[in-house]
Image (tube, rainbow, N blue to C red; front, side, top):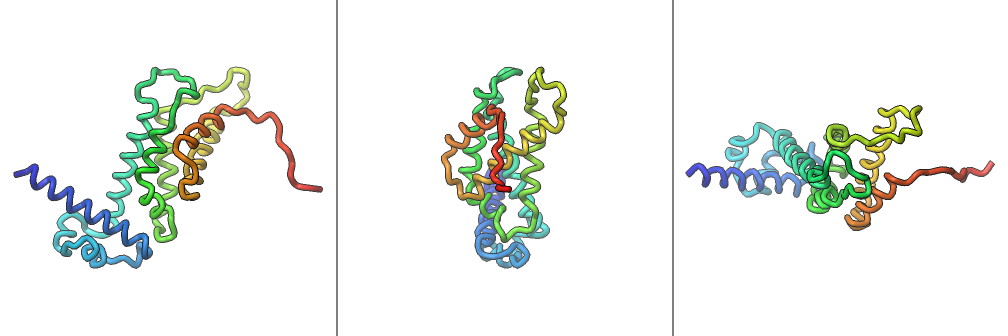
Amino acid sequence: MIKTTDKRVTRTKKSFKHALLSLLRRKHFDEITITDIVKEADYNRGTFYIHYEQKEDLLQEIIDDIFKKMLISFRNSYIKLKNEANIIDLSTIALFDHFIENKEFYQVMLGPNINHNFQKKMIMVLDKHFREDIDFALNEADPDIDSELFYTYRVHGMIGIILEWINSNFTHSKVHMAEQIVKIATFQTKKVYIKLEG
């Protein structure tokens, strides 16, 4: 009986989450009411209040769920590797798979109908994952490089690439993106060319 109840709860919550995301494609979060959500999900208000106190709780649960999935995908790329790995062997396809599988969610959450500052939270979560799990080895020939600044540069560069990919409507394939991340991470710029004409 408990399993049946658990399945029913899971199914009900999934319907509410789907309903909210569907509404967010059409209107701003501030304009969405609980009545809108239950009507979209085909449930009543009483059922909603069994699971959530307010619509913000529902949105937060959606965000928490996606960040848990993101962490699993993030770690899938290196969980079986040994303590030290060549960056060329560090595939990020699993992480890009995650964004493809949840494409509509990210497009909604990074779109104009949310003032929840989701992008900032996403950056913070990815930054935390990188810092907890991966240590970029500094070249011993460059002892003057500040390791903290180096790490910030590397991590936020990768995050920026991911955000650009999402915001460009996933223009490139996940394989292309994974390959580019590795190539960019291992590329050293020796020169720059000034485009501004004096």
